[in-house]
Length: 318
Ligand code: GUN
Image 1 (cartoon, rainbow, N blue to C red):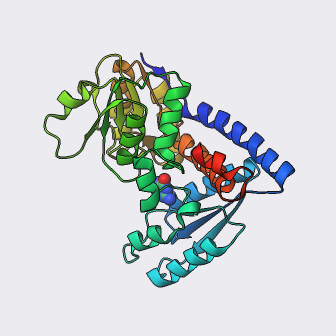
Image 2 (cartoon, rainbow, N blue to C red):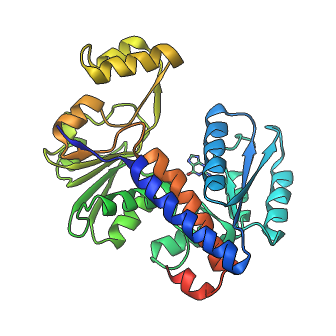
């Protein structure tokens, strides 16, 4: 049975380190980092994520604000909101929560965020910096995954890492970050031929394509380290029973949660088969999700230090 890699524990450690640094920055230099999240419309999942990000900032002494905008906002008005935040000297970090409504030009909006305030690392300038491993902040989920692997002392250098999923937010930047850590990286996707053949080679296997329980035992080499990025809602009791089995503690807990909430969260990796084959695996929930939030908080601090902290150049090299 695979060991669990608790992202939530690593996130807690990261938050504590950030809290100490934020305290020093504000006590010794009078700088209170500030994050502004832009939330368009009323997507419940986005609202939950933004709420979690705000609370996580406040818990470490970072100021935060949410700009809530109507779902019928035009691209032009949204661009003005972003530009005003770009100009605001007390704002260190800007986050545009995705997805945006389909009528909004997402590329134009993400490109409008000042790169020095781009906490997600989505601006093309920062994508380029991530690509060449230069100063700045990397996207939160991939950066959190690398932090998790390092803190659990998983050897990355020389490891064969296989990522399933090629999104701009996770798959692609993670491939770059693992490459910078000297892994041999393969990125697979929906058109990959003979997927199990590719994934079976992985020392580190990452599921990041957003399909519930898609990665099965046949995809996993015995003894691999498995990172599950998926957060999928399963809202059928029959499906919950199929995924978690009819007996055992885990099954009972999941069914209880299902009866309370009407759904359970499942990753991209089949929960029972993943645990059976992997040496270690991140749980869902409690794995990668909390790390993303913790990295966002740390990225906010990094941007504040780079833009207006003491020794900006040194901070920028980190
Ligand atoms: N939507 C899903 N993941 C993310 C993320 O990491 N950042 C932002 N801004 N929106 C998201």
